Image 1 (tube, rainbow, N blue to C red):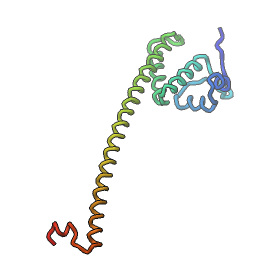
Image 2 (image 1 turned 90 degrees about the horizontal axis):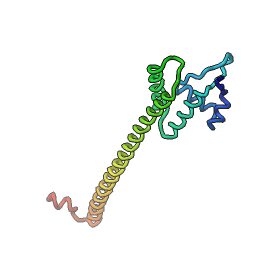
Image 3 (image 1 turned 135 degrees about the vertical axis):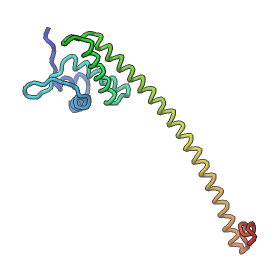
Length: 163
């Protein structure tokens, strides 16, 4: 059985993304895409499956660094566990498991981030309320002092200090 080879335009159309996005993913994720003599990219079914997985992980909120780590981990597992040139459904299962763990960790971090943002928001509100209260008291004291200065009387502060 001959393996199907796709060009970058075909892959972009299948995945519903732009060609420059594929080049970006190849570069940032350090994907090893085969090329012909002219340097044109030649995608295999395996590359297509990997790119589908990458897009699903991106949809789940993982950044390219996390996705690259997941792909590298899956490649290391595949190289250690399998003889050369053999691929089994277990490879994909391992990649999915690693990706699932990364997604779970990412979701936990996002939840922690939401909780911290909530705490910060509440603290900022408290600080703002205290600042407003402090400014109000300062304004009241200044108003009292201005009124006493206009009346020509000794200020309340002067009376307290005995001057």
